[in-house]
Every structure is written in structure tokens, then in C-alpha cells.
Length: 208
Ligand code: GRF
Image 1: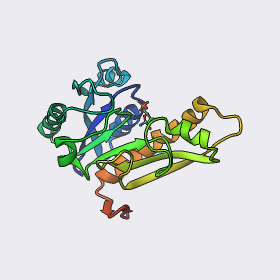
Image 2: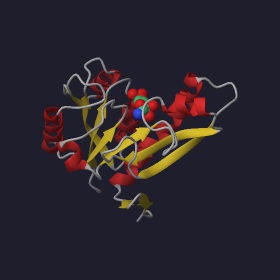
Image 3: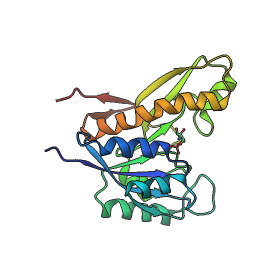
């Protein structure tokens, strides 16, 4: 049997992407398994979802600065990950820019999902930015994490139409449905060893 890729998910909130990944990983033919959920916020809905699913959790205090993390918290997350032989770190609504030891050691093995078609509408409220700009299509992007904000090489994207009567809520819901397909798919491709970063581009190798 093929080796299962050990995954850690980092989240700050609701946790629907964490759930989508963890549920996909429960499928016996899926090449990855979620070993750990790390949150920076004890109120994160993701925490309860993980507990219900019997997945190990950790709460790491990342410091008071919004959107940032202390060097100590990065070290701590790195320690938690390596002690569990984590091979892939998935950011799923983790509201801090990852830096320090965790990024240094996991760059190329850390991915994120963003609710817009990158490189448009990076940063917070990608759905609202798209709506306010007036685009006809938006979607989601799964990408490798680099030191920038939503700037790393793109693994895959899914597109949705923007409707005339959309508001932020309705567009976000349409995008979220696609996020829940895109993220497990990206995890699968990584776990199968099918992603090659070539500069800014990610080559997806054929199934063997
Ligand atoms: C998602 O829209 C994701 O794209 C963004 O944060 C949101 C997290 O939602 N990065 P959830 O916590 O996974 O439900």
C-alpha cells in the first residue's frame, strides 16, 4: 500500500475547509491523513470539528499582533509538526502571515487557499474585493505559501460566475463550495508527489 502523507492544518475560524480536507482524508483510497489541527484561537470552530472527528488539536498563542505571529509560536508549530512527521501543512482560514522557522522549513510543503482568482484580490475579503471591482467571474486558488501574502505559485483554481444580484454573502457561499473541492484535490496531488514548482509555475505531473 502507498504511504499516506501526514498533514497538519492551521486554522483560525469556522473550519469548513479543514473539515473538507479531513473528510476527504478519511476515504481509504485517499493518499493523505490529517494528523493535527493547530489553531491560534481557542474559539475557532475548527477545534470542535477536529474533536468530533477524533483528530489531535493544539492551540498555539501567536501573540497579540493581528495578522502576524511571534518567532516563538512559529518554533512551537514547527516542533509540533516535526514531532508528528508532518509532510504537508495546509493553511485553511489561518488569519496570520506565516513566517519564521515554520515557513523556512516548510516552504514548498505548505499550501493555502484564497477565495479569489489570484493574482487578483489578495489579502483580506477577496470575495468583497471582487464584487466591488465588478468582475464577472471569481473563484478560489490553492497555492504554495511563500513569504508574501497570497503570492506563492498557484496549484489550482476553480471559477464561479458573479451574478448581478450577488452580495458578499451569496458570492462567498458559491466560492466556498468550490473551495471544498479544490483543497482536497490539491492535497491529493501533493500527496501523490505530482506537483513540481518550476519558478512561478506549478507543473502537475500525470498519474502514474
Ligand atoms: C475561506 O474562505 C478561505 O478561502 C479563506 O478563509 C476562509 C476560511 O473558511 N482563506 P473556513 O474556516 O475554512 O470555513
